[in-house]
Image (cartoon, rainbow over all chains, first blue to last red):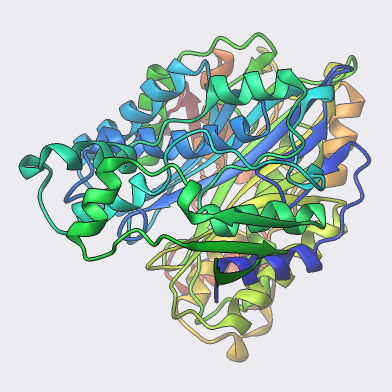
Length: 277
Length: 277
């Protein structure tokens, strides 16, 4: 079952009724009425061994840091400030204590940098290691950026270079981190620890200029499609205007995947089409 | 590594600083300042296949219901009302869709009965199936029941019969559910789906008569020890006054474990001692 299908099924099955709930499933975070001026933002993201990372190329502290970073990123995509985290960790009874301590230390240090308090969680036995984090943040009511606010004529912007993280993953699946070429450092670094767009999220939300925002995790086409679908609009993306780093291009050409030119992608409510222009 | 040791390590390593945080790690729920009159309660509890349940004796809907029930129970232990849940689910790509749908339906129906909105979550690939739920509730500020409030001279009460759930697990590990003796039904039912003490929690918190409260999950001795430790007090438990069902006694005697009499257990700051009286 594809994750997107599963989420659609859940969304259809779920009925909400608590009055303070502003936004449930279907955005980067759920939104709940909080103080007079602010909303609470709530998000949950997990990291599982073998699926999201391999120990072969992730250091333990990086696993903890990344699990926290991807959650922070969801809060930032709505313009908010992260505050509290609950952390569930699953590991085998035979797991070595220094590994778990190092994962936790990486997570705590990372959370500390963003002023996040770890306020609870759970440890469970599990055949393979996973970290499941629920992060709670706060946002001024007038400033929250949702997926569904895009209007006709809006321009699409991204806050960084596209494809580096995936290029990094391709490199890591092929070779050791001790043996990287200079142009491989940046993609690998971005895959290991993506930088949450904290200042960007705050500045964009405070500017009042942004109608819709999303945390790209499944690629630009899918996530622009999510904005389009939530907003009841379409979107056109021009391949030749995408910001792609020289590093990512070099990695891609090394894998025989040349950057396609002369193509544009039209995204209508999550349906991707390609046309020659 | 034992869970208790791990939690102690985390607790020592964690520094909190967000001002609205009333209570972090160390109680059934974390407590955050919410409205003028109320606190938010936050808890996270997970259920993993092979560790917390086996498909052999759990029906899919019961897995979902139980995962929700154990979280609701934490909110009830502080006297609160459950409101919102974020659900992370991990399963193998080859997992059958009807199984996952049934688990989810069990969880949603159960949540619905308690007026809980599912507001978000995450699905991840995982070698073994797990459900990790973060539940958020609400409680009147003056009425919250913490672990640390016990005073010298307090009596200890439980809201139900002790040991049934464990007796049920022993039965389930030995035989099929289609083949139970009459006295085995109750223990098995209580193991499959423990009943959160919703009304009890509300009534006890509203009464203003309760100084400390806890959700028993690790057995009375350990959890009375947790109250004692958090309150800086000791506790004495008399074996012969424990409420144990006839069913649990029958199951226990079938396993050669006779109920011990003439013993009392003294719990001082989590240290268990037994003395003859």
